[in-house]
Every structure is written in C-alpha cells, then in structure tokens.
Image (cartoon, rainbow, N blue to C red; front, side):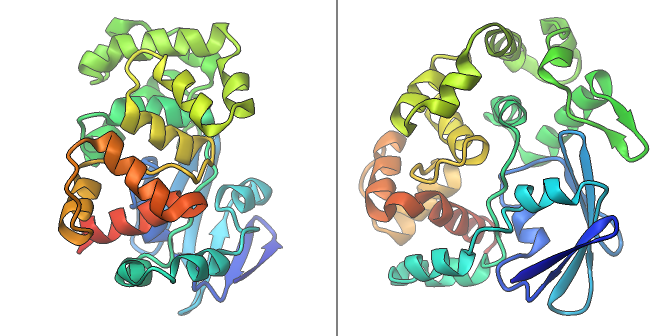
Length: 276
C-alpha cells in the first residue's frame, strides 16, 4: 500500500490492507457513516470522506491529511502483521475476510467515554447516544459536531447524560470524566505497562475487564490484549474448542496464543464471526 498527500486529501493506492467498511464497522469506532458513494468518519474535531477511486484506490478528502495518516496508521506495514498471523491456519478465513481492517489510532478520552457507553449496548444505540453527547457539548462545524473536549464534558451532569440516553451509565461517565480531568490518570496510562494500565482503568467507575481491554487496544494501542465479548466467546467455544467459561481466562488464552499480535487477531476473528 502507498499513499500520497494531495490538496485537501490523501490518495491511497494498492489498498490490499485498507478497506473503509471493514475498518469502520469492526467495532472499534462509532462516529462513522455511509453516503451513496463514500464513507465518512469523525474523529475528535476532524472529518474525512473516504471516496473509492477505481478498484484499488481511495481518496480521503479532508482538511487534516496529517491527522488521518496517523489515524489510519498508514505508516505501519500490515502485510508483515498478516504474515506473522498466517502461521495459524485457524485464522486463515478470518484474515482473508477482514484483510482491509486497520486498527485506528484514536483519542484516549473519546475511546474511554465511547466504551463506557458501549457496555451492554448495541452499535446503533451507541452511535445515537454519542451523537447526542456531541451535539450537546461538542463544537459545531459545517460537517457536524466534534467530540467534546474533556473541559467541555466536565460541564455535563448525571441528569444531562441520562437525558441523552446514557441510562445507568450516567454516574459512571460523570465520575470518570471528573477523575480524568482532576488527576494524572491520562498521563499515568500512557507511561504504564499494559498490566498496570489495565489496573488503572479498572479503578475508574464503570470499567470492567472487557471495556478496559477495548480501551487498551483502541485508545492506547496496546496490541497484547484480547477483548472478549459474546462474539469472541462464540469464537473460543465453536472454533477453538475451548472449555473455559471465565471471559478473563478466555482472554488470557488468546493472549498466550497470539502474543504481541493479539489485538489484530481479535479484530479479524471478531469481524469474521459477527459478519459471517
């Protein structure tokens, strides 16, 4: 894959390891959508359209090309990752189906808020709640609303979040946002090893094992984790013949199996199981 920065955008060519639909719909991000001829995504205060250009090219139309080069992790060679995981025959179908997935490099605060909301929820409802939060507390642009900054979110009360559809998660959000704003947790998370970072995340109100693993993978780019939800539970029992029922032990099994590539393997397996 190669890319070229052009006026107001990025031309991405030979896109074997980049496909917008699989990247955006694999459960790692929620502020995206599809128009007639393109996909769009909002990240923080940044907006992009991903427009097909022939069979093997996309044009990413954006005022912030440098941001989206980092966001889509275009500097990373995914062919090498796929080659490393290809030694596991059981991954063959999942990798082939989800080959275009790239793990996004997202803002940590946005990921924390999004995945607290994701608990016991479905993607359309998560998207609706996040859009409500953004239109209430974010900054308005010609393309829509940004994800609110931590300072903007600090004005939200439990009743505000409840009104926006967050339900029982409302006190989780208020207490966690307050902790993020008034302690060194965000800095501590960046500096900590994965095990310590998970303990820090689980000390926040409303964050358990699965949400912590999602935040580690999607917000801190720690690839030695393996979030386990209903779909991965099915993968473990149906495809790997596993006998454990503790999701913590299932996660540990997969991390022991795939090591530093666990996060990539999780996305391929999750996406394939949910779609196929």
